[in-house]
Image 1 (cartoon, rainbow, N blue to C red):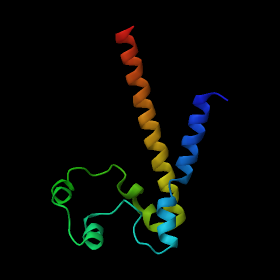
Image 2: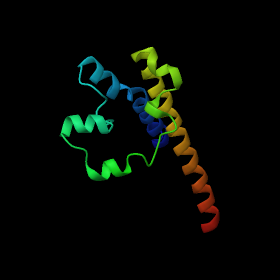
Image 3: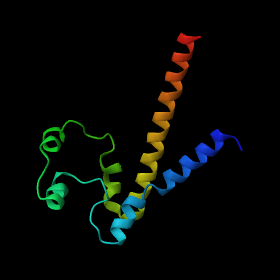
Image 4: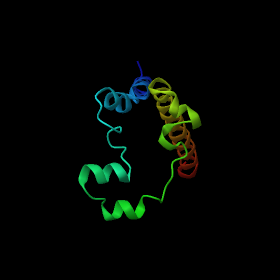
Amino acid sequence: MKTTVKLWWGIAVLIILSPLGLILPARLKAGAAWGEWGLEEIQKLAGYIPRGMAKWSGLWSAPLADYGFGAWAEKGLPRLSLTYIISAALGIIVVAALSFFIGKILSRKGG
C-alpha cells in the first residue's frame, strides 16, 4: 500500500474519531469538550481570564460555530457528532485543496 493511501486512511480514521472530544465529556459528565472552552469556562476552571485571551477572543468567529449547522446542534449528541465529522471532513478538503493548488503554483514558478 502506498504511503499516500495510508495517509488518507489515517486521516479518515481521525475524522471519524473527531467526535470523541465531545462524546467522552458528555458521557463522563465533564462539561465542555476538552480544550474548547470559552471565556466563561476558563473563568470557572482557572479562576480568572488571561488578559490576552480576553483581548483577542472576539478577533475570529468560526464559519461553522461550535461545528454545528444551525438547529442541528440542538438535536442531540448523535446529530452533533455527525456535524463534527462533516466539519472535520470539510476542513481537511479545504486544507488539502489549498495545499494542492499552492503546490501547483509553486512548482510552475520553480520549474
